[in-house]
Image 1 (cartoon, helix red, strand yellow):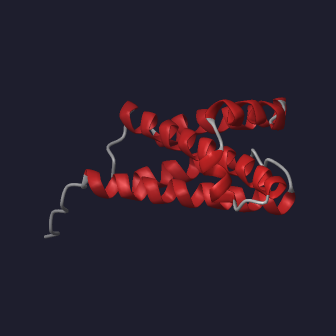
Image 2 (tube, helix red, strand yellow; image 1 turned 90 degrees about the vertical axis):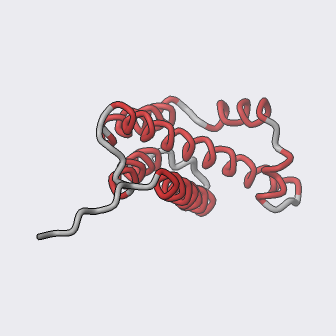
Length: 137
């Protein structure tokens, strides 16, 4: 007779999602820095990563898991775009990316994000959020 498994820990799920989001955003930032492009298609990768992490954390299927998937994907998109902008500004100002990220304001980041992301990039970002909702449920 198989042993019953312990119920999933919400702290484990939160920690797994936090680390997974940070790792996916870091990969996205490195790829964007290496290519000199926004690499917005990584939003789809972040969506599938969020869905996989939610399943690994054994979060119950349903609307709540789909919302968590969208939230985690949006966090990866925001973090990646913030640090891509900070990296580019840091090069110009002679700062390290994390120094530039701490000095970057929300309004300035929003303005530069609008300038850097064209309609195709926005479509990729939106597709990532939709895919996160569908794949995470």
